[in-house]
Length: 271
Image (tube, rainbow, N blue to C red; front, top):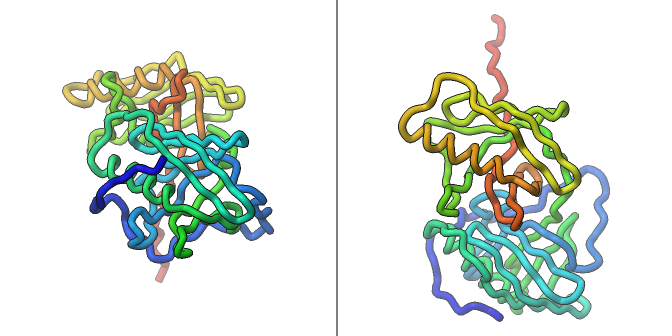
């Protein structure tokens, strides 16, 4: 059922003209809103569309039996949905909390508010757009596409022993590279990360893992220990675009990553 909330400020960066990433190839239009989607834009309070704080973090699945489920940076939600032609009605209720900050909590509340206002849907590109009774676009959804875990990833957040997700230390970026040969490489923020991994479909295990180099000290040592512990518990992986989530046996996030963007090398023109 819809959740009554009061307005929250500063949880979205305004985006006046959000759009789904398009492909030069013709895309197949959705014939039903059923499926698993990632939220790429939403308008919580009827004040304009904005993008999620973290790419790929907000998801919603509309199941064939009329049930729905999804995730935000603050936990899971579920509910129900019904449709007839282009009409669509959603009922959303939160079911858990991972312990998040004020802005993440505001974002989760804002998404549930936007979803509660939906009365219609239409296909758009490879995804769907959801509108309210006045015809205002309130949510833009893109399909979650299957990918491969191979590649180099920057760690955005990892789970601490208390269950909360935290960001790497400002001056100690963390990374995880998964090679085609099954090797794990990267950085714990102060030392080299080395090991191996195996995956089969949505299942993945990392380890044994080790950190190589001079032992870390102070906060970096604690952060390294927590990252290694989180990676050691990984059972599943899920990818949406350039975002990947490594998850535990209860399908809760352990490590959230984004694909590393390589910085082009500037070359001075010859005179």
